[in-house]
Amino acid sequence: MAPRWPGGPGTLVPWAAALLLALGVEGALALPEICIQCPGSVHNLSEVAHYCKQNPVGMLQARCCLNRKGTILGIDLQNCSLKDPGPNFPQAYTAIIIDLRENPLKDDLAGTFRGFTQLQTLVLPPDVKCPGGIKAWDMVTIYNDNRTCQGQKNLCNSTGDTEMCPENGSCAPDGPGLLQCVCADGFHGYKCMRQGFFSPLLFFGILGSTTLSISILLWGTQRRKAKAS
Image 1 (cartoon, one colour):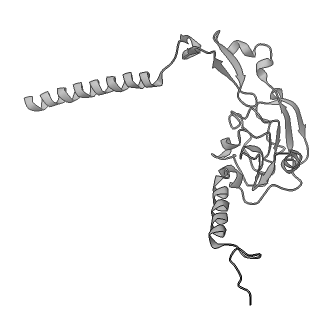
Image 2 (image 1 turned 120 degrees about the horizontal axis):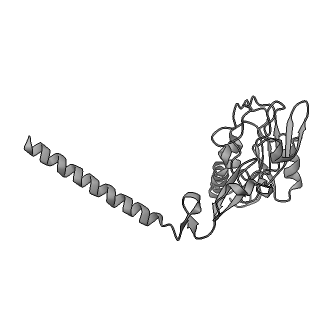
Image 3 (image 1 turned 90 degrees about the horizontal axis):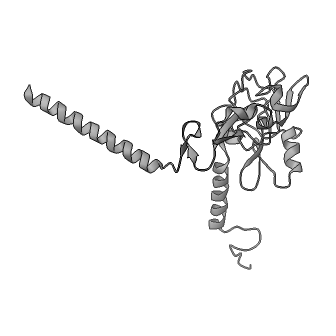
């Protein structure tokens, strides 16, 4: 009988099998926690699955649609018994589409989507309002089983909203219905009134030396009191 080499057809070299297993485990660990927060996978008929299949770089993994770099493009957390999206939810800030229907969510989600500037489609339970209200979206549609918020607006383009920022700052979107003021280059601090480069190293160096000096002074004072008594 001819010898069967370890590398022959139908066999796998033990070290190669171990390598593949290690890579598989590494890939599983690299998956964002929010993607495995809820058991199961993306529903085949969900809008997230449809979007991911239409996207040439989209890949369905657990509850997420990811691109080749592992960035979250969409997330399907339907029927996960969520009262709130949870502490890992900010990991999905790059998502373009999110489905949260069939969850007992609290109605106030105002600050939950801070930083979600890419979000264009958000599906919620029918009794939960779109974050930021109607003015934050191009279209809000209510069905029997969900409320769909579509087309996040850039409120910085609205009249009067840019007045909230100081002279040396500019308005920037920060999620549905949320804005932030970004200081112009060369400005920082309160209302962007400080000019020049802000050096954290210099700041903490001065703070540290001041704290050390005060500590030495207090130690010396307490020591003299102890000797006097």
